[in-house]
Image 1 (cartoon, rainbow, N blue to C red):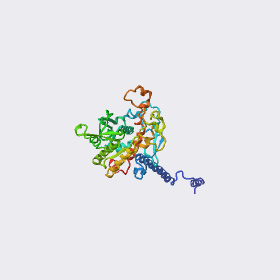
Image 2: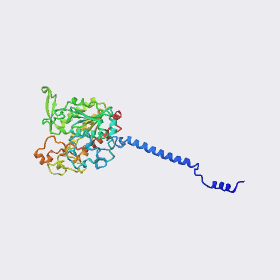
Image 3: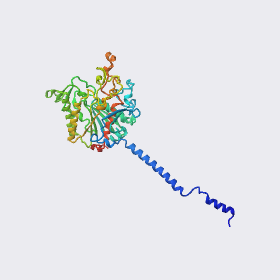
Image 4: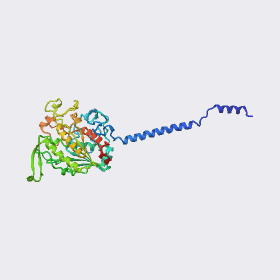
Length: 424
């Protein structure tokens, strides 16, 4: 018979809960497993989103074919995300565009983001673009405005590359930036009138008598024939009532003829020569083609309420009138471009217009003005009248051309461009 103490002990054992019940183990294990699974899912999601930042949302992949219009919108102040790089940290910044370096103190022009009305413009992902350009060539072809956009692109991609892994060199009219780790080049070719002209020298090209060989382009085209992404522009150098068109060669005047033609007629002939060359020589499954629209000039202050004779000098604010257009922008010239591009499309070649004109019209405050390298000493009358030598054509960097490149970037990555698949 058990003793009273043994009986009490047995009763106590029956009444005291087990400190490590068998049912608690699977619940704790399940909870820990769930936490681990959730953590893993969050990590996978984060990695996926990081790797896919470059993807363009569906609602504007069509690029005008029923998708979002990236070119209609407004400027939004954003000093947290912009600028996308620092002027002083861009290894190959141009002194023509380095406004802070040359004394500009109002730097708010750097902090504006373009906001389309119907969607978001994807943030520029330099690493994603470099991956796309691995073992490939991107070439900007045109005048100094396209060169400014090229400098912007070099600064954008250079911001994620160690200085020791980026180089630049020039060969006549061709300037080549190379990201050595990717074996990728981003190049600029000086061809201000697209076709051959007496202004083709990259240094000595400011001639009083401009002559254009409207039917000749081979001298230029051989330098960018094998590129994978081509970005063209031409407009600024055509801005004169008439231009001399040369039929023949500069070398043999006896068999050449010179004819004075109206600006728009000469422009159309040159673009037709360019488009014919593209049709014959470009493989649409290999090369993406883009054309930059007019970059506005802000040299007539009376157009936005200033006194006649004033310009962008001392401007610190944007133009706020919706749809503002200055007289320096010729819509008939852009109509010629549209007609040529539409005609090319019927021949099986798509050239995407990047319409930078309207969004840039608002930005009268974003030009270098007097804040750039001056190639010649100022004259006494210039010192007393700074607006007389203000640059109201080009753009400070960082600044407006960075947004042009964000637009270009979005179209490079749009998934429905058939040639895009071959660039991956």
